[in-house]
Image (cartoon, rainbow, N blue to C red; front, side, top):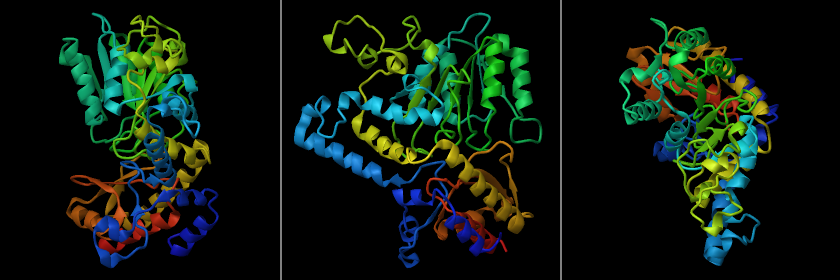
Length: 426
């Protein structure tokens, strides 16, 4: 299993291998700015931060630019390729909803992730004297922390309204039983539970169904930040009865830097006109939107939470990526992901077991391993990877995040990564 021939044999029998050709793979010379490394493809293991460019996204964006150039405003309603801009969001959500175990009526597309977090909290965070806390991870991604903190301040509540779930002393990941215990003990004071589906730093996948059920049993609203789960691990937002969720689309979903974000609102709110929300013209019922009555009638489902008209060019980029996802399923991607990540784990422990530690829990992980490197070896390890065209990211002082993405990464990519580390730290 440690030979390059084994990795090549695995790639030869990979049923999803053809999907790699759907993406632009940068060369080693391009990512290192070192022409001597030539035109061979780099080893890109950073899809947890920014996914690669789908070739279809380039095509769809170009088509929309041509439509704009050749037809102008006519493209809103009479699009030459059957994608009228006023209906663009529907084309996106119909392709995106299956990745989240959601119905199209429950999925929306707008803004960026943190803006959507604020909008969802504006709708679902309704603090009272008895129930006013928001439960998040102690080491949540900074945007989530800041958003929750500012929402609490907006309501003029004390800092204690932010309830932090912390790992046990000496541990880096959260145990499900500790989260459930915290909910059991303080749930009657908690208005919203909002955790991440996949913890960005540790790579831990939270047991979303268990946590959602426990929190709702205590009367809490439950929302999930799926930034690192979207396109990575299967979720069933509808069946799990999740109230709301938000995600970005530029990581595993490959929509491009700063790409448009998605969100979920459960179907039980679909026709609830009394549900509090911040509103805009685009959230108005599409059947009467252009009558301009200034009497707000919410559109059905998640569409009734969208504020502004769909930005077509960034949505086109996402649409191109979703066409690639349609060639497979999130379950098939997950099967390959488990093999890739397990292979990466095996090689790391075989070659570098005394120099590294894998922080990501084996039983709860997606397409990412957060690898802790001995501090005195960290700089040379990360430098060796980047100099060799193995693209990953660092979280100082000692963490390297490696993400083999099943859409475009190979078993040989994994082998090359560990071989570079092995030689650098020999």
